[in-house]
Length: 225
Figure 1 (spheres, rainbow, N blue to C red):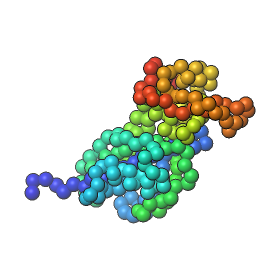
Figure 2: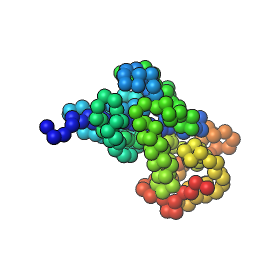
Figure 3: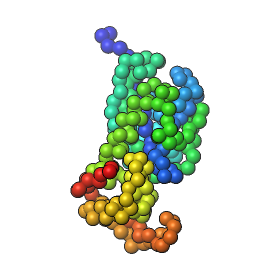
Figure 4: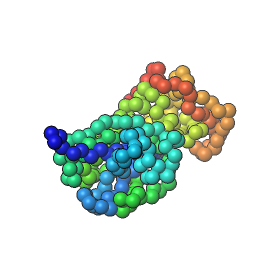
């Protein structure tokens, strides 16, 4: 045999905005290797699965949500020879963006699962090379908010401009001028569409409700500054 046996896995960076902060779902591993360490959820690809099927299965198991309701995209492939002490394992990482969720339930190989503020994750204590996967996925999300309507994936089906601004502020980690943000969003073609309804859940006067439009790219792009 002129090649080494290879394991194939899918790891998930599941991001949400809770209490105005960008959070990631982490599990505390209940089995070796790295038992007791924090890690991203994921698992090995089963013989009858393709990569995305594995990612969507793991996502449903960790969040309890149907994967059709959430944004899922492939980030990168990680294949350093020494990334897994069990042997040669290549992992394909996926980014999942979900609206605010309740407390997660740990999967079969996890002792516990928690939402953790991305800014407070101790990267040096994550298992495997998950610190690198997390950093790559978060930067992917931050960059895509500039030129795509991806921020709406963090929102409920109907949302206010203030709630959408809160997503941008949480993901980018910077405050945005409310009036300028409102103008940019509502003037960008097909970014958001008024539903005709209002809500008082933001507090104060009734705020207009919107849903995601048909745009796939934003012209002009949103800016972090």
